[in-house]
Structures are given as C-alpha cells and as structure tokens.
Image (tube, rainbow, N blue to C red):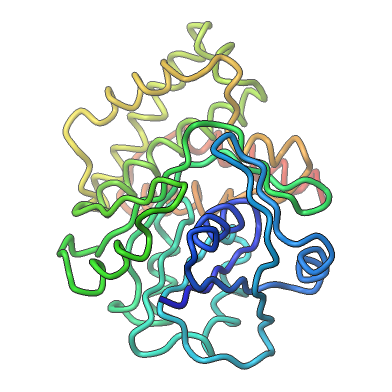
Length: 305
C-alpha cells in the first residue's frame, strides 16, 4: 500500500518511520522547513524500542502525485483546515483517511470534505517529541495505534490495511469498536489535559490533594454526561475505569497539552473543550469545571500571543 503521512511531527514521524522501517511505501507531506530538515539530517527516531535512521520520501502540497491508498493524518486540530486543503489532490476514490487527532469534531470536518466512506476511525497513544534538529524522541513503552471501520465491520479494505500495518516495531491494532475507543480516549484526554493544564502540575501532586482528586472525578463526570447526550457509545462505568487509570499513572506524568503550554505553543482549546461546551449549551447542561478549563486555555491563548 502507498501511505501518505500528513503531519510530519513527532506522532506522524514516529509511526511513519516504523512503517518505512518495515518496508512499506511511505511518503511524508511536508512544508519547506521540515523538508529542509529531512534532506539535511534524514529522519531519525530515537526510541526505547530501537532507533531508526533513513532518508524518507517527501512530497509538497504543490507537487503532483497519484492518489494514495492510505492517508495517516496526525496534524494538530488548528492545522486541520490547511491539511484538508492540501490533501484533495492526493485523495482518490478508494483512499482511506486514518486520523489520529484527539477529540471527535475532526471526523465531521473530514467526512464533509472527503465523504463518509473515505474516513475510517483511529487513535494513538505515544509519548514522542521533536528535538531542534527534527529528530523524533520516543520515550515510553507505549507506542500504540488503533484503527478500524467506524461501522465496526471487518471489511476487505480494513483487512488489507491490517496486513500492511502488521510486523512493525509499534503496536498497530485493528478494533471492531473504534468509535467507542475514540470517545473513551476523548474522555480520558479531556480530563488529564484539563486538570494538568489548569493546575500547571504533573498528575501526581494533583492526585494528592482533596481539591485535585475531586476535580478529576468531577471533570470525568461532567464530560461523560455531555458525551452521552451526544449519543457517544460510552461503556457503562467508564468514568470509574478511567479514574483508576489516572490514579495509576506515574507521579511526574504531564499531558501533551500542558507541555505545549510550557513551551508557549498553540493549544487545542476549542477543538477539545469548545466542542463539548457547545453541546452542553445546546442541551442546557451545567458543566462549570469544563467551562473553567476552557476559560483557562483561552486566557493562555490571549496571553501568549
């Protein structure tokens, strides 16, 4: 399969590199600065699962290429509109678009742009970052990518994709309930990112205070309530399961959103929290903790301009 990686940062760089390492036909859609980095240094991943260094195939938006079989989309939400605009020439009738963004609103954007049938479900769990030279640094045992038909069906095309993803040095897993898994991750990320960014602290110190412990439980509860009103297929008692997961995380664990704030980078305030607040307003649901988290992020956005 011909695979196009869109979003050449730490997530796309990591999983795209692992696929290329296996021998799959992988191309990276890049902008000028990243293209220069890749041509000068190649693409280098430094990982607890083994390093890999190679010269990747690259493509720029203005260049011509035949439609790809798979688009692995790992941009941040605030780059999604631009990514969609650049993707149209490379998406054909049979192209599968596999998004790895957090949240859910991007699914609506992608299906409107490319059609329901081209967008499959996806999510990932990986701790990775880029250094100044563009090297991908991957630092934890977890490097999981989950994918599947949003209908839950095991189609011929998803079976071919499973075959293409198999045998890599990362955990690619086909799910028959990908929509539920995406909503569960959204609930988890909303809570972890919300409380760590609100308190500007790792999860450990937050858990140790009655205020922090209560905030975690309240954000889980308020978020799950909104999601269920949206018709999300959340599992029964998923709030308890995710609270246990957060309670078992390393003391110094920070969310990627919190790390972005520490670096004075853009954040996904509206994509993650504004979407839920709009739904809460339409259903007349009171969600003061979600509103507080969203307000904290919007103030950060103004202050960091």
